[in-house]
Image 1: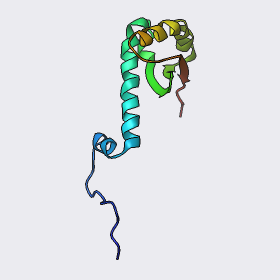
Image 2: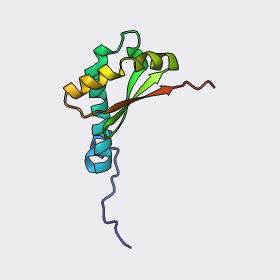
Image 3: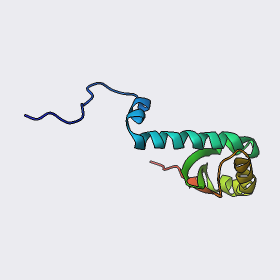
Image 4: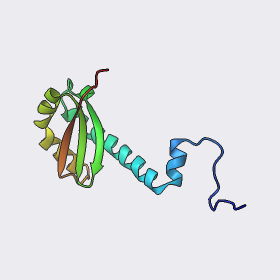
Length: 108
């Protein structure tokens, strides 16, 4: 009978505890926080009527993605993307592009 090299947890852990134990999860959690921080930094530049339709998305190096509910909202948001990039750069983030991904709702 052999014992595993790493002890197994027999009790549930929170996401934060799991992230602390895993460098990969810790990095993903940090990117998710940063994406939320970026959206918060530019929120006032987004027209008030569009704000509920915009969610933070993934960060991929100097590119950032915003998740948008609907193509009409994405079209309007495209007009302010240059201002969003400028604001993020002013706040110290090295962002060269913002990609908009339209989220579609699936009907059952």
